[in-house]
Image (cartoon, rainbow, N blue to C red; front, side, top):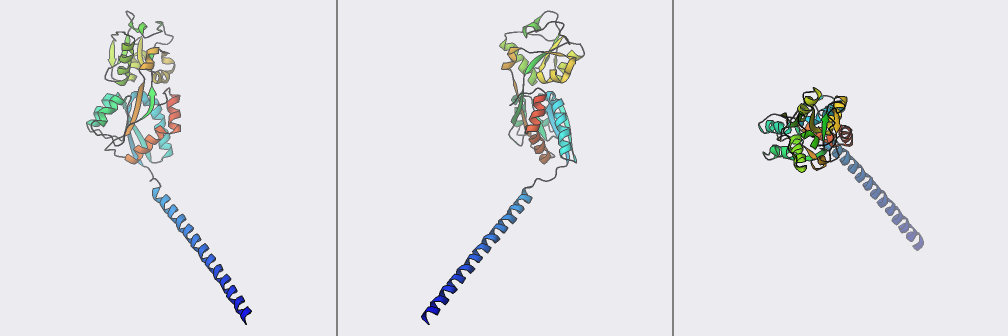
Length: 275
């Protein structure tokens, strides 16, 4: 009688342990399932909404070619969106923004011009430097005046164009001239770098101090001459989402594209420097 009783108790204990193991396994499985469901729920909740509508970007004139290309890429990646640009002198664009002009994104050619906007609390995000740009002398094709240095721009009878000193390219040019201890009186001061370059392209000027990116974009319409003083007058380009952006989500996405590896490739191919 004693041995069968012991055997029965041992059998029941083993059965009980098996049931407990099964229950534990079931609980783990249930927990894992709940966790997976929660993860899927979180994933679906955090998924970015489909972008649509117009993105308005105010950008420095020197960004025209590269940003136009990025705008086309953005529209292709986000069907239903349209990117519109307002290119010009950064100081003029900044004044428009602080004056209430509706825009989603501002990309300036210098921290100083971006500060016009941030000082008025008109930026929604902290400005981030995304590229840098260096100056170059643009001459007529073939460089008929044999310009080889910044000093050569002071030759008598040479018609030289500069950007206005309030514009980033003009401020950088003045910084380079000061470093070289040179005084230069241009035939005109232009409100943005594209206007300065156009004077040379139309042969209304013999040379202009512009950005390398603009010389690159002009192709064989001008010839570029590098000068060492430009290394001390490189401009940082900041970008920021604006406070009252009409299409903030799309504006953030455009900034993300500009800062992405794909965006960086487009910009560096245009002649911009890494930030």
